[in-house]
Each structure stands twice: as structure tokens, then as C-alpha cells.
Amino acid sequence: MEERITSRKNPLIMQVRRLLTSRAAREEAGLFVSDGTKLLEEAVRFCPGLDTVILSDGVEASVPENVRLVRVPEDVMASVSPMSSPQGALFLCRFPPKKPYVPCPGTVLLDGIQDPGNLGTILRTADALNVPVVLLEGCADPYSHKVVRSSMGAVFRTPPVSLTWEAARNALHTAKIPIAATAMDERAGDIRTRQPEKLAVVIGSEGRGVRPEILSQAEQTLIIPMTPHCESLNAAIAAAIVMWQMGKTGNL
Image 1 (tube, rainbow, N blue to C red):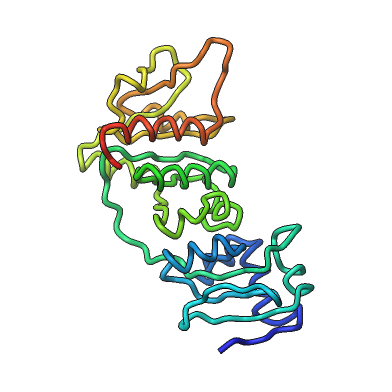
Image 2: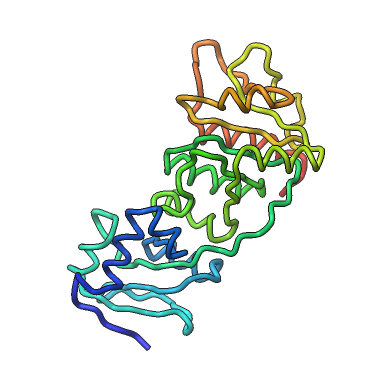
């Protein structure tokens, strides 16, 4: 049954504000928020944890019967929406259940990717190319609304895995999967010739790169060949190139 809320101070509206602005609040509640009718369609199709849908007056969407549906005036939606031009839909999803990490070759590990746009783009590309992704320490929250939006719903289809470097390294070593790290190093091997589909490849942030601790423990380093006048690539672009090289052997 559809509910109606007209107060900006309603407990649900106030909860949405907290979830949008605080990672700690999201983790405590086990819920995250996203927005927009397109992403809502993706959540209905792929997210079993879809919990509550909030729609502005006049906005229509297909909502499963077991999901709470709330209707609000446009001013209430505008007061809580993270967008300057609200699309008339907000929705809450439960975190997916945590599953044991099963290491496999052809995996990308992200080290300190803090920009939500970059992280979301990487997750979207990984989903498209069927490449597993592990988030190491220092990455943006994959369930922040900016990451979810940038991923175009990839987090609904392929929930990201978060591990410490130590836990990821130990699991990969036990599975006998070599670890490589991308680096701007003349001694690094050309990624086109190193069969990345057989490796776990660590990609760092644009500014800092891969942590020295990880570089020192990786079995090899890889480089994406570029023209001499180009210093570096955007982290999301670098990750896309690495994942494309992995996928060329038939992941799709």
C-alpha cells in the first residue's frame, strides 16, 4: 500500500539524509540510498535488497509489491535529494550479504581509489567485462550515492568485495595467483605481453599510485605503454585498459 509523507522532518526523510551523508550511518543501518528512475529500474531488476522507494508526486515507477512505497510532494523531495535537479525518485537498499572471498586469476585490486566518479566507472567497466574487483584500504565507499550513480547500477549486479591488503595477499598466495602492480617504472613489464588474465593486478590512485608496501610485495610490476610526453592516465582509464587486456582471452 502506498504511503504519503508531507513533512521534511519525518523519520524516514531524516534517515535518508543521514544515509546520504554518512558512511558510518550506512554501515550501522546496513542500508544505502540511490536516486533516479533509471537506477531504480536497475535496482528492481538486480537488487534483491531493495527496501523502500520514495517518489515525488506525478512520478511513476514499477515497484515490487513487497517493497515499501512512499509518495512525497516535490518540495520534500527537493529537500532531501542529493541532486540539484531531483529526478523524483529515491530508494533505499539493504547491503548484500557478505560472502567468503574466493580468489581467482584475472582480478583487479584497487588501492586507495578515493574519487567516487573513478570508482563507480571502474565498477561499471568491471561489470561489463566480467572482471572481479577487490577494494583495498583507502577506497571510496562503494555504496555512496555518487559511486552507485557513476557505476550505473553495477553495484546491484556485482556487489564489490572489500578486503585489507594483508587478507587479499594471503588469499591470493594460498591460491597460487601471482600479484602484479601497475607502476610508472622503466623496469616494469609491458602489460600487453604479461598475460594479466593469469594475475591479480593492483591499480593505485592517480596522485599516489600503488602503495610502496604493495609494490615491494608484488611479484612483478606492469606498465601501460604511452607516448613519452604523457605522464599518466586517469585511474579509471588505466583500470579499463587492464581489464580489457584481461578480457581479451575470453571472460565474456
